[in-house]
Length: 287
Ligand SMILES: [Zn+2]
Image 1 (cartoon, helix red, strand yellow):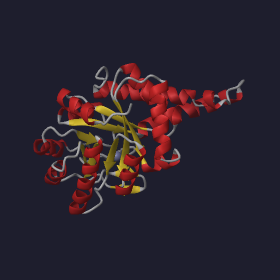
Image 2 (tube, rainbow, N blue to C red; image 1 turned 30 degrees about the horizontal axis):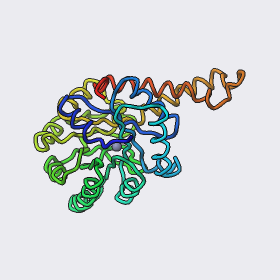
Image 3 (cartoon, rainbow, N blue to C red; image 1 turned 180 degrees about the vertical axis):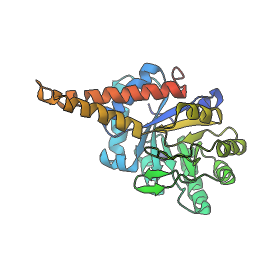
Image 4 (cartoon, rainbow, N blue to C red; image 1 turned 30 degrees about the vertical axis):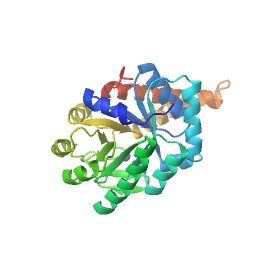
């Protein structure tokens, strides 16, 4: 059964480790992540962007697929199904469809409007026992077509949003979605520290986990980051393994064209990436 991300993240914050959010794109992705979480006895958050939700034929299809897998694969670790960078309408649709967690990304609204909309969604989530993530200070790179420049959030605005009763808070600290540019300035730990000072026990979320060096990840966790989003890294690993399979001509040997064979190396590559991240984040054995 799907659970809210609240307990797993509060435990992570108290225990100074982080739970990974791994975005899903299809059945293979979902299966790879769930099996790895179960094998490593790690809690896990499955992230779904609005674009990926549409691709997978809508939120109800996603909920049906994930719930089916939890049962058929005998998954016993805590699993949250979370809308990633949701719009106000998208968050409501996911709550309706059976997600156990949503992110409302109101970072592009003026702070007053972000507060107003976040507050309403917090009320709905509280009533239904769901977790909700809010965002302050747009995160750089591309979020489903929206390009941000890697802003740094205002800690006082973070405190205002945290006080609305959100479960976890994403704040821009110089992090970027997708691949990091050569001249990236790194994470702003001063900002992160200031945000944690003001928001206390609130689990903080680090978006754009792909390509942040391991020592920066560890430092971010020590400063209150309890949820780290990984998306691009699984995509790169899947693509590289699939390319290798095809370039080696394996799809032309015997029944190598069978999709279950054609995608198998990519699935293993996702599993290896998820394992590596769970070990780095410290969530192994914490289920
Ligand atoms: Zn993000």
